[in-house]
Image (cartoon, helix red, strand yellow):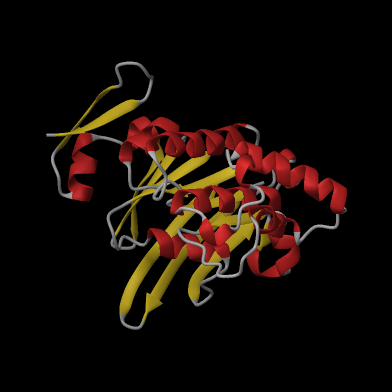
Amino acid sequence: MSFQLQNISLMMGAKTLLSNVDLTLNPGELLAVLGPNGAGKSSLLKIMAGEYRHHSGAMDINKQRFENYDAKERAKILAVLPQTSSLAFPFSVFEVVMLGRLPHSSGARRDREIVFAALAQTDVSHLANALYPTLSGGEKQRVQLARVLCQIWESSKEGKSYLLLDEPTSALDLSHQHHTLALAKDMAEKGVAVLSILHDVNLAAQYADKILMLEEGRAIAYGNVEEILTAPRISSLYGIEVAVIDHPKGSHPLVVTL
């Protein structure tokens, strides 16, 4: 079981957004996608989510062509958390999270159990009855994370589900940044394949199993954290001088600017 991309390229007019990107997203792994603004990170995620279809190359999920899944069946194994989610209607938080259960036919009682479990996991149980439009940006992001967890709740136990996160920590405070990525890491350890776009190199170093670096639409590095996060590579990618040292309390590397 895996999510495989082969020679994925994307053009927008005369501009190349992605060029011949190969990628394998495996259950049990958290893959962090790094790169400067405009590197193609969000374009890659939107292709994997099925939002962009005018690309070349091939995608397979669990040994079946991406396009051969109908929308409902794909939604049961592939969940996507965008950077922002607009909702003007006065839905409660509970109702928003319940939307993640739409592809399923598990019954109202079981759906409620899953929703409340997901609310607890994302630390928003206390907001269940609040109106979604009244929430802060960070609270909305955590509610949307609960929604996508509900979407793949069953398949996450079977090692055949995929979670795509587009900058999931961008609106969160420091505590909830780590809470969110620790949750993503825990899901990966339980068999979910997780891809997360991140801007913070040190969050990637702490939580990722593998890293994909993109630059101008090209995959320039892909592999284990220690192999990819080297000072010359990071400095070249972001145009800033850094050093990579041993973390004083953890086993992962620490990136510091000079």
